[in-house]
Image 1 (cartoon, rainbow, N blue to C red):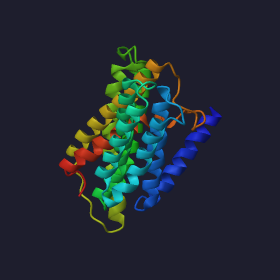
Image 2 (cartoon, rainbow, N blue to C red):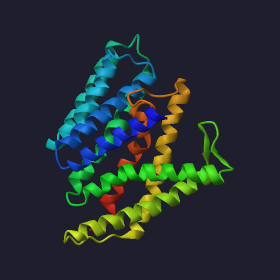
Image 3 (cartoon, rainbow, N blue to C red):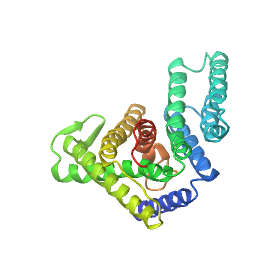
Image 4 (tube, helix red, strand yellow):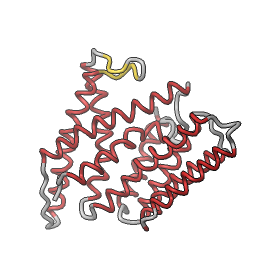
Length: 273
């Protein structure tokens, strides 16, 4: 438990430092590392070795994407990635199954594109991007915490007994409710802090509440999908990079899905102005 607490505190400290400099390349670098390690863990789960050309291709794409986004070369990197995968598939057709290649493509694009939405939020909302980025993490953790306590005290009906036996319907509902309340509270605090510096901020709490519901559902889906992969591959954790917690995918699976949900919904609905 002590190791788990220390590791958790260290992660929070790193997150705070990154958020303090979110308007710099530090955010791109942090997302780059996060994406690359997540892809590495996902591909390792299905048996790809470190030195595998497919592993190198996937990790390289995830690592480079947050940087090429700055100069708008996303499409070119994506084209290079697909060409490389096709050529590697032809070369290693006798030793690499097509289904493994398909998983490699899916896992690489899923992790790298989803995490890169964090950079997209910063670039799309120069003034309020920090709040949305905080909600990417906060929304996942609010939901998870609410679901844990609601499930502990009120949980009776299993939500997904095969994938995740401890999750309950009551816990899921509690997670949604807690997330709505805490995201609205966070927006209120953000508004007051900005107001203290003479900056007027308006919050559409109805739209924010709708966003919070989708964020909570996305967080649950991310957690369940990560669990499905682990169960089918017969592994307990994706890695041990975070002592006491496991790998990046063990801690950031929910965030991987909350990031794109917040990114796309905020492109359609004005929440903070």
